[in-house]
Image: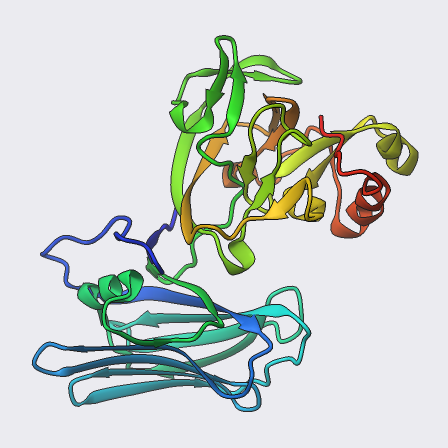
Length: 337
């Protein structure tokens, strides 16, 4: 699985290369920014001097598109993408630049997340590799001449593929086990967890990933005592949560359904959490999709390896979840699990 090797505002690089690997010759750069922009904007401007000029700049113009300038000494490469940025009331734009220096090719794309402008892509030749020293400088904010407040976060990964998106739970999320509630971050492979449909079940694998928590990656905070009995739960926006109650039976004819956390956000019992730039997301893999118990609510556990597997409950789409949350919105209480 592809992992982030650097994320903005982080103090260290995940999986940082050693001294023998000085260049990121094949990599992916991602930057998300808030829409709408107030005219032409320098989103990011990094400069360094090692006896020659180092310059990496990301520029966005609502009318003319995206431009990334990369300079190393006398060599300058410009990546340009013609696209009109949407005039939305509020949204998020994403820029992705992938380069293969040995293969002498690059590709840059732009999309408006959950909006217009999807799939706008351009390609070119002869990209420059990026020194890991500059990856470190960018992620830790060293030599940053300018960073727009519109720039929500950015990150780097090795190779030409983006890191997978996957549901995760926070390390402090209490998980029911035969010995009581255990924080998810303390679980290990082969530990026994209590599941709803399969009883006590061993965890096949526990994976820990450093993930961004801004822009489209902003997690959801389910607040106690509305949801869990004792503590707030930090979850990825696509983490599935089991919901029950007469409203569920009335709308869907089911005793229990699964809803992604992002569809529950109401500003009271479920809130977007932007307090941190990154966090460690815990992925519990049981070898099949299951529902686990967590201090008053039930969480649907699935992983990328479960793609195509039957889910233990019906999974609501956004348009289905909207009337349910509206019915439950008469009170701050969410009936979960």
